[in-house]
Amino acid sequence: MSINRRDVLKASGGAAVYSALASMGFFAANPAMASAYKKEWFETRSIADTLKAMGVPAAANSADVSITSPDIAENGAVVPVGVTSKIAKTEMIAVMVEKNPAMMAGFYEFTPNADADISMRVKMGQSSDVYALVKADGKFFMAKKEVKVTLGGCGG
Amino acid sequence: MASPMRIRAKAQGDVADVRVLMAHEMESGQRKGSDGKLVPAWFIQTVEAKHNGKTVMTAQWGPAVSKNPYLQFKVKGAKAGDKVAITWTDNKGESRTDEAAIA
Image (cartoon, rainbow over all chains, first blue to last red; front, top):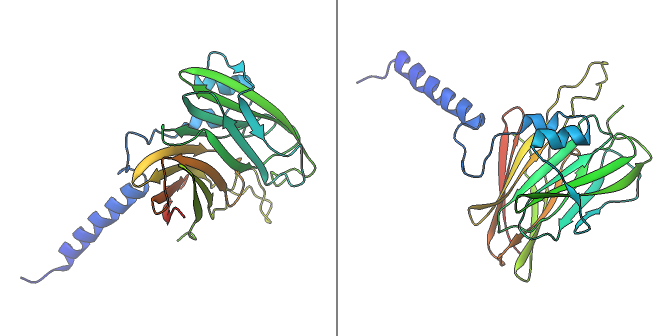
């Protein structure tokens, strides 16, 4: 039987819809781990608001959370920030730059197969405190470190 | 599509140290282009790291992450030859996965 134009268009239309859905993340590879993007956590403008958006009741300062970053960053567009948590059962580390318009730089969720030890590079608009928030065994801990920036990194 | 990620994974005893360099503009949406208009936000929102097919860590990023993001993390119980795969997805729905073997 001959293939007519209508069948070809129907088939390719279906393929287009599939790939559009796939690129929208419809067919999440690992639904158990892939939680929805926490848009609200990235829209806050103060540390207190961010903790509220995240549902953090209180965070105790902890010396077991260490932030590795330069005291003075030459280039605010690329500031290396490392966070290590020595607290047992750390499940999440969040990195926040207080004086940035977009305060939450990012957060990480660990399975027992990854160490609570990450390093990333963030943009800093100006000298600011960098906060690390750790969730371990249902409780929250925080540490902060001041990073001075000589040249702001938000393209302003 | 996007350029490949550079993944370097090195076994250090029972733990693998993984360093990833991703190629992405990471536009915060705050920057003005040469025409004076705000460049729309375009940044990686989620990252998933897998070891031998099993997810070990996920990350959610905001626009404050630097261009061409660098990420370093550690995988437990890893040995040379194991596979590490990194997937990122950005706010436009684009996504990319790259894989490397642990050295």
